[in-house]
Each structure stands twice: as C-alpha cells, then as structure tokens.
Amino acid sequence: MVIPSTNKSDPSVYKLGRLHVFLLACFICTSTYLISWKWPVVRFNPPSPKAAHLNASSRISASDMGISQEEWDRLQKALEWSGPDHDITQLNLSTSPVYTTFSIVRVNDTYKVGDKIRVIITARDHIKNLKTYGGDFFQVKLLNSKLKASVYGKVIDHRNGTYTVDLLLPWEGQAQVFVRLVHSSEVVWILKKYWESSFPRSHYYGYFVGPGPKGTRITEKVECNLKWGSRGSWSKGNCCCEYKDVKTETVWQCDRPKQLSCDNWVYHERGALKSPLNAFENKVFAKKLTNINIPGDKTTINVFSNSAGIVKTERCRSGLITPVPAGFYFKDVWKSLICNNQLFNASQMVNCLKNKIVYLFGDSTTRQWFEYFERNVPGIKRLNLHTPRTGGPLMAVELKNNIIIHWSPHSVPIRFTKMLKTDLHHISNDIDEIAGGSHAVVVFTYFAHLVFHPLTFYVHEVAKMRQAVIRLLSRAPDTTVIIKSGNTAGLKNIFQSDWFMLQLNTVLREMFSDIGGVMYMDVWQMTSCHYLKENIHPGPVIIANEMNMLLSHICHP
Image (cartoon, rainbow, N blue to C red):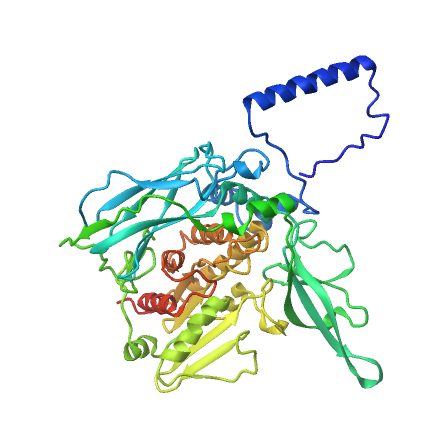
C-alpha cells in the first residue's frame, strides 16, 4: 500500500491554536520519553515501494485461472507461509544469521541406519532478541563430504521463532548437520509483496522484420511483456500489439512498431531485469544476510549398519507418494526412498529407450537432459534443424534402435537469447499434438522463467497443462508422463529466489496430485542437499543422477 505524504506547509491542514500546539508538544515529549525509556529500538515504516502497483493481480478470480474456488482455497492453504503481520521493521529487528542458532536434541553416542535426529533452530534478530514469529526460509541437510553423502531435511515452522527438523540417518558412517538461513522472514515478506504486484521485474523485446523503402528490409526492436489481469503486468493502454493464444488464452503484448504492422513480429529476446526494491529493502536483501550458514551444534553423528535396510524395492511408477527425504546421496550416487532406481550404463540406456520417442519440454534444465542423452547414448546424432544450439527446438536420433529425442522450450514468458517466436510453443498445445502410446515418453518442467510473474498466472498455465495431460492419457493411457520439479537455482534475490521456486513446486505438485498415470520427479531435494554449489544448471554429477531416476521411471525396473 502506498502511503500518501502530507504537505505540512498547507495552512488548511494545520490550523492549530496555541492550546492545541501546547498540548501537542506535551504529548510528543511524553511519548518520546516513554519510548526512549522502555524500548531501545523503535519500529518505523520504510519508504513506499517505487511504482510497484501492489495487489494488481489480486482481482484475478479462480475462474480466470481456470480452476474452481475450492481448488484455489486448497492451493492457498498449501502455500500458507507465516511471517510478520506488520510492515517491514528496522534492519536490526530482522533475523540475524549470526545470532540465529541450531542444536541437536539429546545426542546419542551411536545410532543405526534408519534412525532420526531432531534439530531445533532458534531465530534471533541482530540485537540478540528471540524472534516472536516465524516465516524464515531455512535449508537443512546432513552431510559427510568425505563419503560424498548427504540428505535433505524438511523444516517445520512453529510460528514463534523456533523451527524443528527431523533428519533421517540413511548411511553408515559419520555425519554433521548444516543449516542455512536462505532468507529472513522479513525478506520473504518482501518477496510475497512483490510477487503478485504488477511491477514487471522481467522485461523482454520483440523484433519486427519486414519490407522497408526502396526494396530494403527493416527491423524494429520494441519492448514486450505478459498481459495478465485487468491492468496487465505491463500496462500500456491501447498502444500495443496483442497476441492471444486461442487455446490457452494467454495474452502477450508488444509496443506497436512505428513502421511495421503487428503481423511482422518475428523474434523474441530477453530484456533487462528491473528491481522494485527501495533503499531499505535492498539493505534487508544484502548478501551478507542471505544464504548464510548459521552457527550451531557441530557434533559428529556416528551411524552404524542396520540389517533391516531402508532402500525401496518397489518399481518406479505413478501414484507413489514423495516423502521427505525422497532419497539421499552416498558416494555421489542418489539412492531413492520412493522406488527402486537403477544405474544405467550405455547399453542399458539403449535398451531402455529402444523404439521410444522422448519429448522433453520446458527450459534449459530439460535441455541438459537432452544433452546428456546426446553424450551418452551410443550412436545418437543431433539433427540440424537450423535452430539455435541452445535455444532449440532440438532433435536427436539413433537409427539402429529407433530412438528419437525431442527438446522444445516453452512459450513466452521465457528469458532466452534472440530466437524465432514461432519456435516457442505452449507446453499444453504441444502435448495436444502428441498421439501418445507405449512408445511415447512426455517429460516437462515449468518453473525457472515463471518466478518473475504472478503466481495466479502460473496456476492458469498449469491448469491448461493438466487439461492437456488428461486428454493425452484419455486417448493413449499407456503413455509415460513425467513431471520434473524445479531445482534450487543458487540465486537468492528479488528476481530468482529459491523461495519462489519452492512455492511453484508446491502448486504444480498439488495440481497434479490426483491425476493418475503421472509421475512426479522431485529434483528439488536432489539439488538442495548436494555438496556442489547451487546453480540453476546443476552440475554433471547431479544431472547424471537425475537421468538415472528418469530412466528408472521410463523403464520401471
């Protein structure tokens, strides 16, 4: 909410008599004395955000998103995140990564594989006071760097400044607990505030190409963005070219070029990122306060073998619940606690993919999967489709065993380098073009480029994908459909915070939870607990483990 300023020089506003002035002075003096005596730190409201157009998309209804009100209520409940119930306070009242600590409850001398330990996190501010509300974003893992072993832990927020984590002990050997404060609750409050605002954090360009004077060709570059809600997330009035997808009803708009017509839009390109943060909010987002390991109990946990074992033997299939943890690393190999995942060598990979067409949709993280196939499937060759090597679409074939791999990026909004707009398709539309069958594998992800835009728009797009998947499985129920979750990105700023990604993961998982025949691959846990530095493009060892999980789902060992 933008707080209007008052003009103190206006005599019509401040017509005070002497008595009024005297009483006001007494009140101010008394209040100042009481405040200085009882409270060493005084809260204040920071400057209002610059041109943020807050709550612009709050007018979006459930029907606008293509879902029922009941489902929207359920999604909001799943996304509920505690935090401050007031405007952002002084920086020293935010959660401190220095004074926030963790401890292990009742440490034993020895444990067995399959046991659990409980960790308590106690949040404090920068003046060492206990926090009285929750909402901090922590990431917790158990790690043994020598064994290259690690496991993810889910944080439970008690909404009073304390948090608990129950960590599974899945391997034999030693382990230590590591806790990171990714974002303070105050930062999360800011993230939530701007997520549904109409302030466009991500900008894009459109290139219009057409005939010019005297037989020449001219190009005009203009700004483009998503139109969403009554005002749109990038409101330009009636000055623009609008492009509405008939099936998804998504509207993209560009500034009208000066010389060419709207029909001459040829290329799409990412533009600048613009921050809505004011000076105070930038201080809260400071790097020294973000994604920092907090101090705590460094006790070495000793874990001994257990004949009972914990690794799952059930085949990977749809309908399985994703627990926490979903698996763990040991000697750099991911061992699933959902189903019996296997390690695939080259020949096993070929046998798995024989006579199959694999459709990979999404962003550059599914392109990493395409490139893995390209490097590791013997005899496979990329076809020259005369498209950008990284922008796609891409296709590779192995003729001897009839293996075909496709990769296509999703439609706008997407932050790719300059590419033909005709090569950008809505995932739901592409799925509708697939006949399906036992030979078809459909894999999609839809996360990294959507963190810049309102959650309500994301729900709308996922609803369209869900309808397309239902149609696909209705006409060809033996089609393999796999959803790849979002992964940790390493970026912890107003643009691509992992907190955004975590919320989108929740939405997509919830919206597909009751769709039979769909398998959900949780790579969030695989990337958040690994020892490698987080990156929007996970390192080779993580990709290799993701691919073994993918192949385990395709071939159902």
